[in-house]
Length: 249
Image 1 (cartoon, one colour):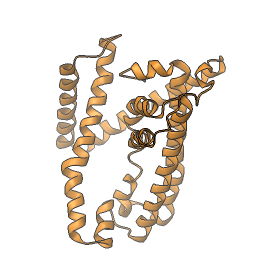
Image 2 (image 1 turned 135 degrees about the horizontal axis):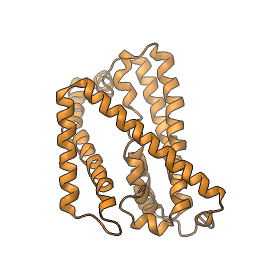
Image 3 (image 1 turned 180 degrees about the vertical axis):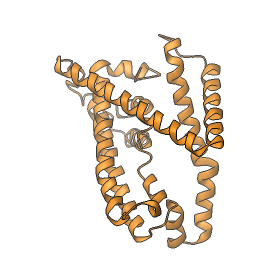
């Protein structure tokens, strides 16, 4: 569930929420919404214990045509577009150290993103085991980065770097449109809360383990995301966050 969203969404969430306080509230609320959504999926997963995520639920609730159209849309539009965004995020972070103080040329970012897509495709075509190893490696890398960021933020808070949290709601947006956009970007970072339902049939005792995994996993991710954002604001001003193309760097 922990993906590139936590490294790219903070800028958009802050931009649309308008201030540090509302920004942190949006991240917390997004975590709560994701938990509630995942619990609804846990109910579906225990009522219809079949793998495939939304496909069997739409099949049972509506008709095969609706399930087929959803699966087709997911395969052709949703997953490829998400993959493209993740690849562009990787390209932004990979190129940032080579262009300090400025934005990397668009052609460099796009070429790196295209190379990332090609490499991941080749890895998945070559071997399922290799793809699993690569996925586990990068998941561990993301967790290490998050631990480092949170540890640095806690250290800065202990040293008294709390100036960005004073009057943290001043200048917050009151526009429903902006707040909606802030939630949209925050929820994108939480994307993945429904992924466990894709392997319901492979779980041991899903009636117990599916809700338990959700109740432990998603709140833990929510705490991590909020703490990462707190860490960003202990080391950077809101203006610096908005101007940065790679916040975590």
